[in-house]
Image 1 (cartoon, rainbow, N blue to C red):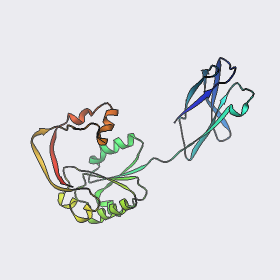
Image 2: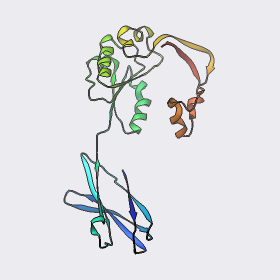
Image 3: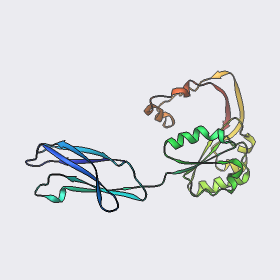
Image 4: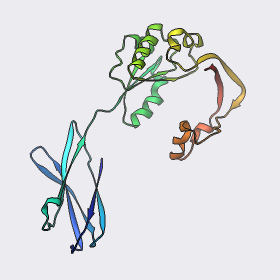
Length: 231
């Protein structure tokens, strides 16, 4: 966690102003760092500090000017950083191998990822999850779709990542269609590999890639099959 303190100077000020960074260690403030900034009358500046470890439920601390002035009340500023547990995400897949890459990507973003086999979804309690992903789940039973529908009605988020083994008939069933935005018609192969070519890179779905420096391997990988869907 990064902290920035903005300072302003009025009247005569020393050429160098030191700011001390303290974190509450349980028995009082413990000095963690110090920075020096050059200030001139009528101008301001800023200093930055980092809180390396934030443990639940919160971390408190303060920033102090080393040299005081006649107005001591503004020589100290206090802060509190709340620590919340990582969001929990459930990945439901037939095999652990299918979920590996997606789980690795989510863990890199500090999500708490749990993977369960498709057959256990119907019996799973979903209240504690921030999102649930179906990933190449061949044929979730009706009870599983009903469990997901209940979760969605309560405000939960469900993502469906298709794979090569999903059953269009199951995904087109009434329980599945209660939460899915489209029905799968069939899966078709291309005579020759195709490539993914976004036609609108500013679309919200693709805008994030520009921040990451481009599409990378996404537009260079072969696409051998696709699903025909009906909204």
